[in-house]
Structure formats: structure tokens, C-alpha cells
Image (cartoon, helix red, strand yellow):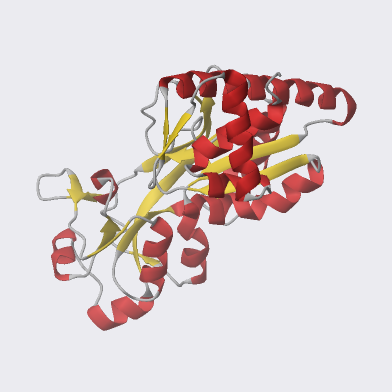
Length: 302
């Protein structure tokens, strides 16, 4: 008996989600059906692919080898199907996109309707992760990353850059006063990130003329959470223009220490694996984003 593509996809889903029940939900199967598929696959291959414990699933050495091959086969099949579809009606198939929650909400979501009108045969799967992910492990086609890239295995297409500013709501400033100098920030409630620490480097000069490293009184892993805290008057925050431009324009947030603020811009890139051919789906979405953002970039609302 030969292994089927459905069995390969089920196995990949089990490994990716970390459990048979989660994979079953993703695939639209019952848990028992997903479990039987895994058992049938192991019988065909005459080897154990996954060790099952009460707490987790663990790949065997044979399982890892089969996983790599299965992913490669599925990618080739999807690529072939896409090429055939392109001959008929343009980009088609599922495009898996990953981005941090603020970028997803403030940049990608407003562009979805227009993209779908132009490319109706592309199915979008939108996932949000606050930290960097392994694209292959999460079966992600393209991720949007903010800041300096470190992974040399990824190909990057620049989308633009977004300026950092220090901000607070009028309600906060009315209650606690406007800081007149950088040193005055020590007397205020500062909102910042719990990781990475580099995100707590603000575009203001410290006493030595270096970018200011702040110690937050309120931490979060999510820029969107910090934005909402700032809007509620919880403290002073430093965030990127792409997520604050609308609130600055409406007056719900006000830039502080404008004269002292350094010109610091975060690069934004679309990334995908170097060993993966740039699919028509990825190219269509990245191209659409660049077209719509244009010269305006991230300094105005989408």
C-alpha cells in the first residue's frame, strides 16, 4: 500500500499542532479518524513516527526524516497545482500569512477586502504571533517582520519602514502633566515590552547622548495591548507609526518631546524561505501591499 497525500497532510498537521485532537480540528476530522490515519501511515511505512505519551507527542528519528520529505512533497504538489491554476485564472490556493497582532490589525486587515476582490481564488489564512516563528514548522508562506532581520535562511522583500514616537493620551497628560525634558520621564508611568529588551530603547537621548533605555512600570508582550493602555491613560508609550497614526491624527494620542526625538525607523520586511520558489500567491500579496502603501508608507492610516 502506498502513502497518500491526505496521510502526509494529516501527519504534518499532527506534528505542527502538537496533538492529534488539534490536528483533527484543523483538518475537519474526528479525533479517532486522525488517530487511525497516523496508525495506518505507520503501518504502511513499517516504523514508528511518533512516540505518544500522556502529555505530548514526540517525533522519532524516522518521524523527523519522513516529516521533512512529506513537507517537501506537499509543497511541490501545491506549487504544481498553483502553476496549473495560473495558466487558467491567476494566483490560487491557500496563502498562510503571519504577523504580529498590531501589524495584522492596522495594516493587513484593512487591505484584505481589496486584495480578495483582485485575487478571489487565493484563500487567506491570517495568523498572529508576537515573536518570530519558524516558518516551516508553522507552515507559514510569508511573514511580516518588524525590525532588523537575523535569520540568514530567509529571503526578505522590503515593504517600508515606520518611525518610532513617544506618545501619551491627553487624559494622562492632563492628570500627570507634560514631561518637559527626557529626565522628567523618570517621574512618569512608562509602558514597555517584557521581551525583547531592545523594544524598550526609545528614540530619545539619555544623559550620555545614547538612545534611552527605559524601565517600564507596566509590561506587555503585545504592542496592541500597550497601545490600548496608552489610549486609556495608563502611561507613556513608545510605538511605531503604523499602529498609532490614526490615533495621533484624531488627537487621541499626542507626541511628547518632539524636538528631542531622534529619527529612528523600524524596517518592515516580508520574509519567506530562500529555498522556496516565490509563489504567485506570495508575490501577489506582497505586491498588492507595496502598491497600496506606496510612497505614503506607514505614516498615515491605511
